[in-house]
Length: 289
Ligand code: DGL
Image (cartoon, rainbow, N blue to C red; front, side, top):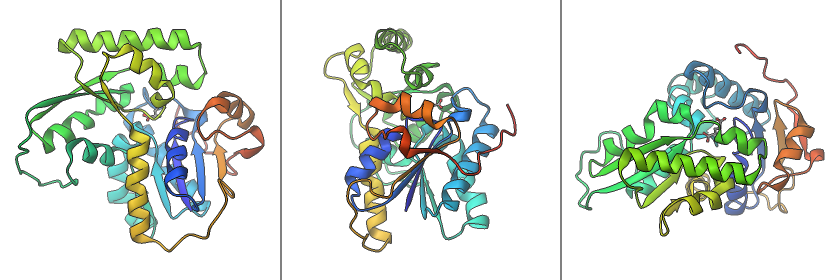
């Protein structure tokens, strides 16, 4: 069984792509709605919440947990993989959604000591993400570190994931997106031709991004890339799955209020009705606020 974790409902975009790419697998989703948004939270708190989320999914029987949240992936994944996982769950896997995107963008398999010079001409890419992801600076550091011919411009969109999660008026969301695009243009002089929506909530308002960006801008579909990369990983490492019909046996957990979550996500891809959402059996106890 594959676990999918997000700070809230944005990871449903990744779950929907995973379900399409890996039919026959069972998924368990956990949204830490009681603690969203992660974007403005201190890194140590995001690390702790992510560890607890992964622990709960392992307890539910997941062998692999995907952090379907960029903020959690950039701030917690490496630390958890290097220290916590080998000690507490050496037989389980914790994967992020950041590496597959970097690999796709650079056309290269992730290798830390790679110093081969990319022969392609210089190109620029923009990343729209939460405050936490942008402050961490991982997208820029990792892509530019791997490929010196790529220039990354990160644009924070404070409040956007929260507005999507609240199902705010589309007109207000579109205005906010136009102003983030204008901020980026003001800082960089022009909008790069390739754009990553670096928060799993943003594909839910992809059309508003497409309208705010210059025509012809390529918007990189993170959910699809992650699903394909995970499919390759799972196929390499595990047994043939027992055939299941669409989403049979999938489970949806939240640390928040299941009814409220079901109402908000009603229009999201991969959303399920209130009857399918449950508060996680042992709610993650707030440690810090
Ligand atoms: N969906 C999360 C991400 O991909 C973040 C939203 C939040 O701030 O909680 O970054």
